[in-house]
Length: 358
Image (tube, rainbow, N blue to C red; front, side, top):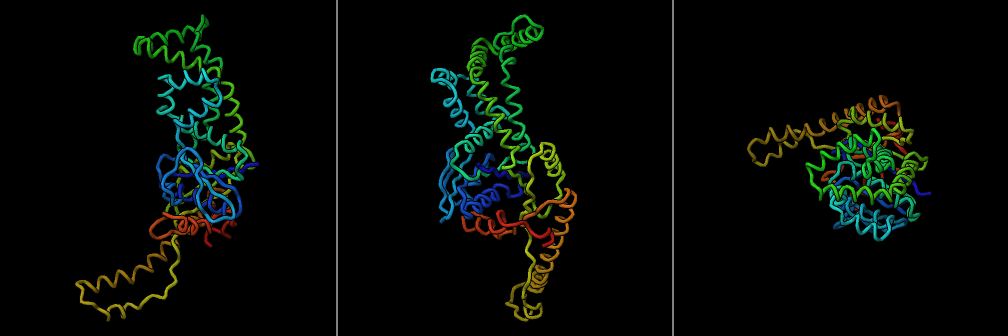
């Protein structure tokens, strides 16, 4: 069975980079792994040290023993793939040329999350991977990702499609005809024709959409799917993250723990004595003030490290207790596989820290 790892969290916490590092960690453990980002920001290619990513899995050279592939979701390309795969050639050709379809596949709110659901369905169904790692959008949109299967089943319900295509004489049909009449006057016959054609064509595919949506919902709720929440060590106690955790628990999804990112290392020294630095005055104006700032750096770093660990301990306790992986801050950020490797050493399948203060 293909396992799924979901990395979720608020924006700006390094979630995309940690998704790539997590995928690398499992690949280095011998698994066949694919990582997919549904964040439209193109940071994953940079983190993996490759020139570009697109909608198809691209191999990343990790030197074994497992394999790593990566892709960045292309919403329009995924819509087109779904249409070509699940509609007859004639229906697919008409649907791809439909103006309403082209607008929906590129601009409709929520379609990005649903296409991510379709891509996840394809990757899990291929049987090619031991694990699919998904970098989700920031928290408020990640919830949309989890709700997408339910929304699609409702939107593509055959009874709703039937009312829109052929309102009839029922009470709901009368209301639909009135709404369509207003839309017709505003949009014109050309747009209405495209709209009717779209719903007629997609209606032939609606059962397939709903079946796959139900299958993905089952995947998300499966014991083979694990969700990690990513937070920043400087601000682990974000209310929106705790709210998202409640969403996961209400859906009975498996919460695997926290990735606490950018943890300040505790400076250990040795550090030069302040008097020695003062004695080495190179004749720079303000040298005394410069030395005072240099001498304060280790103290500030120790204070920041202690505050991060205390805040993380309190946050994990408030969240009801959970495993926590403490991920160090890397100077200069991550741009290569070597940088990702440094982070991967602190992530699963390595066990979580003994405790947040470790």
